Image 1 (tube, rainbow, N blue to C red):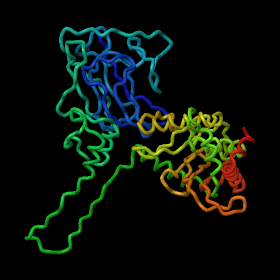
Image 2 (image 1 turned 120 degrees about the vertical axis):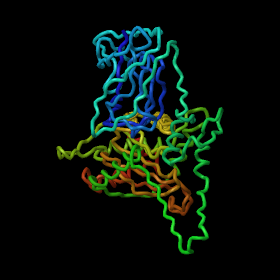
Image 3 (image 1 turned 45 degrees about the horizontal axis):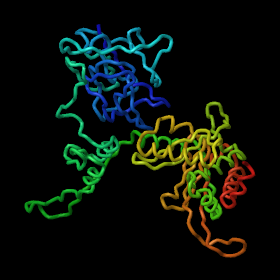
Image 4 (image 1 turned 90 degrees about the horizontal axis):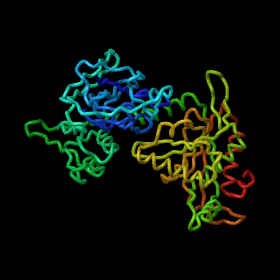
Amino acid sequence: MPQVMEFKLPDLGEGLTEAEIVRWLVAVGDVVAIDQPVVEVETAKAMVEVPCPYGGVVTARFGEEGTELPVGAPLITVAVGSGAAAEPGAEPVAEGSETASGSGNVLVGYGTDHSRPARRRRIRPASSPVTAPAPVVPVSPLVPVSPVVRVSVPVSGSPAASTAPGGPVAVISPLVRKLARDHGVDLRALRGSGPEGLILRADVEAALREPEPSVSVSPDVPAGPVALVTAERIPLKGLRGVVAEKLSRSRREIPDATCWVDADATELMAARAAMNAPGGPKISVLALLARICTAALARYPELNSRVDLEANEIVRLTAVHLGFAAQTERGLMVPVVKDAQAMNAEALSGEFGRLTELARTGKLAPSDLTGGTFTLNNYGVFGVDGSTPIINHPEAAMLGVGRIIPKPWVHEGELAVRKVVQLSLTFDHRVCDGGTAGGFLRYVADCVESPSVLLRSL
């Protein structure tokens, strides 16, 4: 007899307590395999495809696209057993029971129990359609209950298509759906320009550029000043909410100070041009600056630390997990290069490229965005010269880099046009004094002006 298994939203790691359903990857009535992704969710840090640890027939889905669910809330139920459908009155089986199918894909909170062998169960067609009951979910007055979709499992063993008129509109990516939702654009009112009416990002942007309808005044209304007050309210949640809380906490807890210096980057750019000779891998400016930072942190480890307020201690960290700012369609993200101190410029350049591409496509894992110990912020890409960075809590420092541009500069006693960059260091004054911060920044500037200085520490 088939058993109805309830699969709950797992803990996606790093203390995340909720996720928003972006796109269902299966419909009710579909046959799913063990570890097949069934839903795409967006946390405050990344887009994640969630695999189901059970194989069988989907009998219920919990929550519509756009719904936020807390960790531990039901996602789907799956009929597991010798038939493709559950019999009337079948009860949900607790996760981890002997009849559950094992999963090899582990997220926090569920996965394979290697204490006993897992085996897949073959799904065979049922003799007649049967409606599988949804599991009983206790209702808490503090947690809203998401709508549940019930289904009659089809006779055929093939997946059943969901073509309900009220289903989701076809868009090219979840980021396009989020863009429309954030700006209040009704996707059903758009005509997609993609294949078979697929809605593209350009279609949503075109709708956003359409002028507001004009307001006409009836001649019966007495003439007078007309004041139209409009305001857009954007929920401070998701990624933007996490960023806001992190920056606010940084300002509340960290007594920061900033120092800056202009540096002649002509020799650094010449060294990069020599490294990027035809036929070899390209080295980015960011990678060279990152390599300089790791060398500077080896000399001034006070800046690769954090403050433990509960223990009233400064914690010096041995590994450098280097964060870098990346602007994406979802907003500012800070991917982290783990163990950057062990990488050369070529390896760093490759890792920056890999993480940047994942950030732009919304495929960064939560682990890619956490655990940083020092952040490098290249705001020069925005065409600005300087800034006073806000420290990425709970780190102790951030190096900011402006644009590299030709400027008048005294070089070897004569006025010349050189490639100049402004460097700024914001640091936690609890972990070190200005002398340490100034020494770090001066060493970075010396390496920028004369890359041969870096060779001494290699």
